[in-house]
Amino acid sequence: MPPTTDVSELSYEQARDELVQVVSELEQGSATLEHSLALWERGEALAARCEEWLVGAKARLDAARNGAAASANGRAAASGESTAV
Image 1 (tube, rainbow, N blue to C red):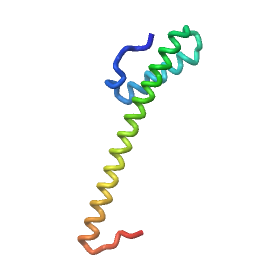
Image 2: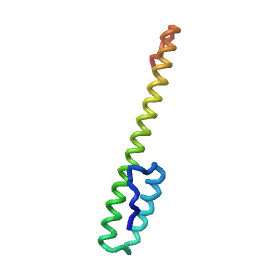
Image 3: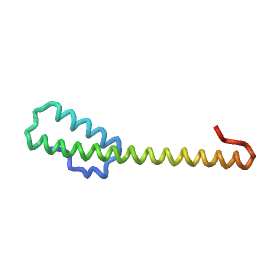
Image 4: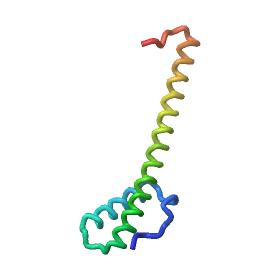
C-alpha cells in the first residue's frame, strides 16, 4: 500500500523520491489491480505536488530577476545611463 502521508506536507525532494518509488513499483507490474490503482493515484498526487513546488520556485526566481532588473534600471536611470539593448 502506498504511504499515507498527506502529499501537501511533503517537500519537493520527498515527493520526488516517493514518486520515483511509485513509478518503479508500477513498472515491475507485480502489484494487484487495486494496489496498482492506489499507486497510480498516489503518483498523480505526488507529480502534482512536485509541479506545485517547481512552479513556486520559478515564480520566486522570476520575482528575484525582475527585482534585480528593476533595481539595476533604477540605478542606471539615477545615474543617467541607458539600459536599452
